[in-house]
Length: 316
Image (tube, rainbow, N blue to C red; front, side):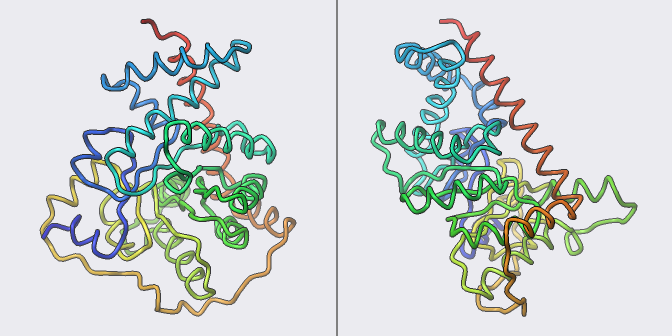
């Protein structure tokens, strides 16, 4: 049995891609998308017609040019998500525009629009996760959405303070980033990192242990992997979202995979009481988390703008 099949026995495997062929090949439970992945997906020939139909649909709804372009992107994300849901048994994650990351009200409105578009395609809310950046405003928006029956995936999570806030808000799932944490430490340290001392892996392990110690039901889904060593160190985590390249590596490796995380094993953590002030202070004090959150929002915003340009310039 290869490592991918072994991993599936202890962790829900999620495909970090919008490529339908890859999803069919590796048979994940769920799939995640974001503006960067959608940018890659729109180059695939099977999505060409969806770009045009999404743009035409938005134009038929009226409004100014920016509103039409924005609606086109939302529609395209949902159409791609709908195609993915024809293949996977679980959920697809669709992301709120990163430019709304500090606007609680607008985030809630956008999330409900996406869920409504899925509903128009016959997709119930329980098969959709709304991805929202793990800012204070994003977490508060997710808290309210969860109470309305809309499950959320809190992304761009780099720090422990973000994880605590998400759990206290009762969000369905978090996506702590492993690879981007490692990237930061490599750029700011001369230390040689292995899978065993990888700071991104350590971050997810700490969050996972804290959640299990204190009975939080929020799902921990490690994300942004750079190599299979990171994945192997997190075997047993609730979920892991993995790129097709690394899924392929795992599928070709026939060595035994050891489970590293166990929900019943206590990490001995103490419960932390958090306020908005302590969240902001803690995030600001964590140079890596503060920098990577800001960078992640900027990059997703740029990719969203590129996606809008592609849709607006598309020709029949």
